[in-house]
Length: 307
Image 1 (cartoon, one colour):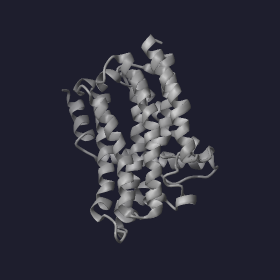
Image 2 (cartoon, one colour; image 1 turned 180 degrees about the vertical axis):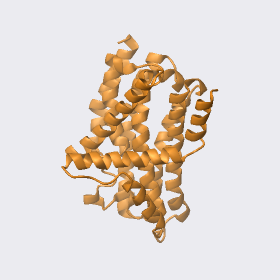
Image 3 (cartoon, rainbow, N blue to C red; image 1 turned 30 degrees about the vertical axis):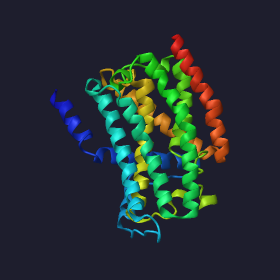
Image 4 (cartoon, rainbow, N blue to C red; image 1 turned 135 degrees about the vertical axis):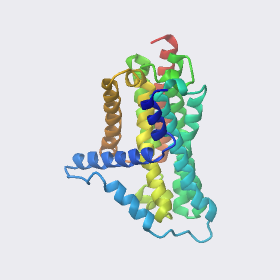
């Protein structure tokens, strides 16, 4: 292994600070694009870091009668899942040869952990509004996971493998099935981040924060950081699945192309969040089990036929 590659391995995988910082920078991109859509200036580059520091100096309040241990551990579980998922992706993109068979399945499970942590934290708080938000989060997760699996199947069929090292060396976005799967993946990305129109688990105007209504101080900061890391990781996931061959090619041009694809996906989620109205939870379930699943299924069939 070359010295440069060893240095990247040391910095990106054992060192968790890179992923956390990348998530906070993604949160800044989110807020900056939002400001541009609303014709405002937006925050400075380090504002998400200042906000996180403020969370960690505030007092932690635990609701009376709640499951204290579960209430405090839930944010850490979600954060650990998001970090591990990000590291597996970066390892595959930097050195596809170091991946293992079935790591894609592990990655899908890890990407579910932040949503499960939110559900557990909401249930542990014993707040009726948080419980209602947790119920919505559970229904939303069951809605988008099916089409998301169909989306992932398209690169798997084209590569003939469930190993990330094989998937990131192909470019499914250059095929008809890949384009359809990417469109369905963008919808699943928006829901997995619980961004408008799929922010019904929080719905400030209805549930006053919903699943996070009882959280404060460092636990709330960890939840916010987890969401920022997921906003960074999920677009990287789609870039790796559908543009991996272009990103892992030798040369800096491929890396710049990957960065551009990631930025376009992040900006698209922000624009959708600022230009679409919130759906009801029943509308979201029908949307994902109906049109999005049909598009994903069509993409799978076309991929199986070689298109």
